[in-house]
Length: 100
Image 1 (cartoon, rainbow, N blue to C red):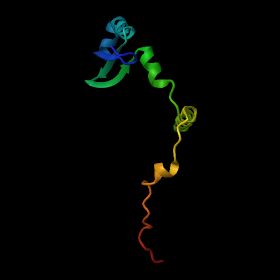
Image 2 (image 1 turned 90 degrees about the horizontal axis):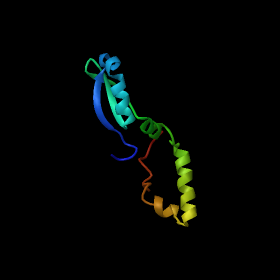
Image 3 (image 1 turned 60 degrees about the horizontal axis):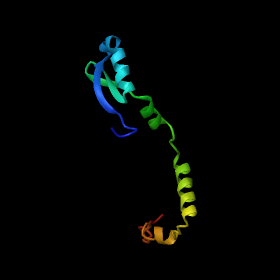
Image 4 (image 1 turned 180 degrees about the horizontal axis):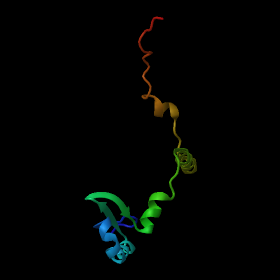
């Protein structure tokens, strides 16, 4: 199995939880996610700790990601010409005429 990804192995209803709790935790300890249902509808997932950590930690904001990208560009010595990058982005057309 791919590191950081868990397989969905079983599905239990809320009513089945008390009698299967040990089995559920064994599955989770073996890096398998477990779905929990109520009246046939999925309501929760129990994840292995490694998967939970992967999903919740290390998330960076857009600004932090942009700063990291800029720093990597500087460190690698890559030169980017902003005029070349953005030349086709803005339409030179001034828009329609408006009478006030």
